[in-house]
Image (tube, rainbow, N blue to C red; front, side, top):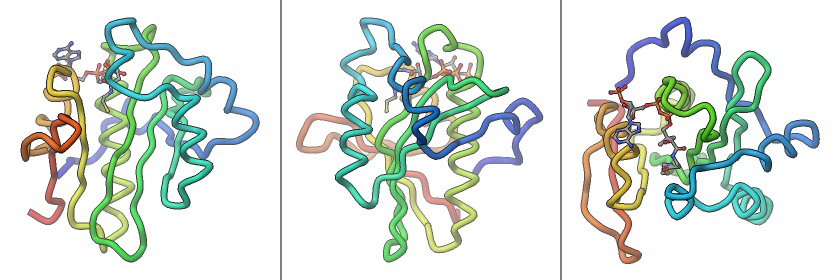
Length: 156
Ligand SMILES: CC(C)(COP(=O)(O)OP(=O)(O)OC[C@H]1O[C@@H](n2cnc3c(N)ncnc32)[C@H](O)[C@@H]1OP(=O)(O)O)[C@@H](O)C(=O)NCCC(=O)NCCS
């Protein structure tokens, strides 16, 4: 599991989506080659509005919205699922994706019933594979949509 957050990681906030930060989330961009890796934030926020279990979060550092993630951790389940993670193209490569996952895993692990975290990504998404593997996610093979599934056991 994750070690304690570093000072920089501790500045990352995962904030609820509000009318105030919504437009900043919708303005986040990916590089063209990354756009097939994750749904748009417009689509994700629409999905969150229809899925009671989806928890959308703005990734904020020093008051700036720099990314977006979405996950679920239902109270009647011991598995959490990370649906989305993206960092604005202008802010990538500075450790913010890593810090966001570290913070999210801390938040999830603090809910003691959750034992496993699942994640999916396109098999050609080397950044996602490298990032998640470094936290201990183990690849489980492709799902029916051809996406790679990976899981992290929190209690190991
Ligand atoms: C994946 C993503 C969130 C990473 O965010 P980031 O802020 O750039 O990541 P970080 O700077 O924290 O780097 C995390 C690790 O990924 C590695 N990495 C980044 N881009 C990479 C690439 N193209 N290939 C291989 N590794 C890569 C970094 O080297 C770093 O590893 P290290 O700490 O061992 O050096 C970002 O690239 C993104 O938004 N991608 C598009 C959306 C997406 O693919 N989301 C994941 C699918 S759900």
